[in-house]
Length: 191
Length: 191
Image 1 (cartoon, rainbow over the protein chains, first blue to last red):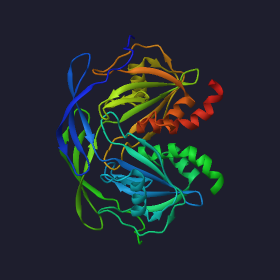
Image 2 (image 1 turned 180 degrees about the vertical axis):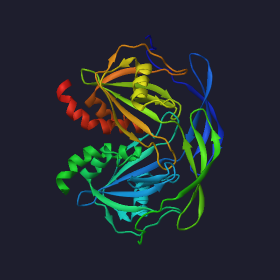
Image 3 (image 1 turned 90 degrees about the vertical axis):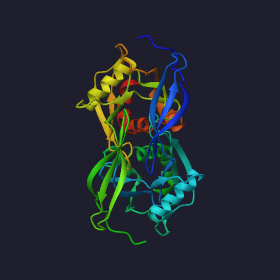
Image 4 (image 1 turned 120 degrees about the horizontal axis):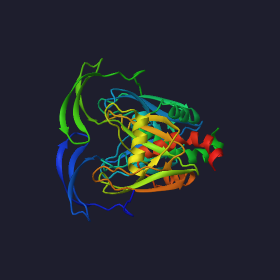
């Protein structure tokens, strides 16, 4: 049960390409342990940053999208989101994805926080954005192969869905966790 | 702004290997759209299921681990967890990972829920397990290259860390979201 006081910071020596796809790349990252002088390689998935959007309507509902997801070979109930373009601001990307996927636009916008989808093997981040006063006013602009059902549900019903297994997307649940304190503040104004 | 009433369920025709690593495989999944009669391939990451453990001590603290993570090339503050062995029960795997990584064991154990790390491109699930009455009583059994600092913090301090960006691991934050209603019930007994 002896443990070092602090885990060591491995030194990254470089990374080698391992596999490429349209949406992410797999690299072999070469690391050296500073004390043990030992080299090891670890596989890392590199992808652009992502954004997920909590869009709150004036009557206290959240905008949800339901779509078929190839990763799980099934439908998934989520909040809108997508891939951030190179150089694009996360909040701007959130507004863009919300508008393109659902036609909703909003006025007050803020970053709720940024998370790492998987620090063990994935380098990118997912930014979580809150859009208040969301209203359906724009035209849809779906990517090729995108088919979405847009729906809205009262905020508390969304939290109940999350608690009961009706929403299982890890990054969507993160957005709900970080939205919670804002909702405690906002709910007085909208309900 | 016209949208189909329901998005279609694509039919999976099969998957082809694309890249292999020690911890996950990348496949090219071939799908056909049922109405458009169009075939498309999508890259999917297959990995074993994972488990993350919310371990609550008798004095109302959570067990945390701090370790260097190769994916983000930095340290990360997390709850214990790891890869579920083939055929292993998620709750048993949670107890095992908790014990191996931190030396903590517990009595009352339950599944808080199961999430999809990324339904868009990843097939596996992460199971979130609650262990109550956690006490440090066992010997550590780290995997090769594992170096962990184990610490405990009061539950509310952990939620404050999560809200403030001190915990960024998406699947850890999911566990905190799903633990919240249990904590509301348990806090009377431990604080």
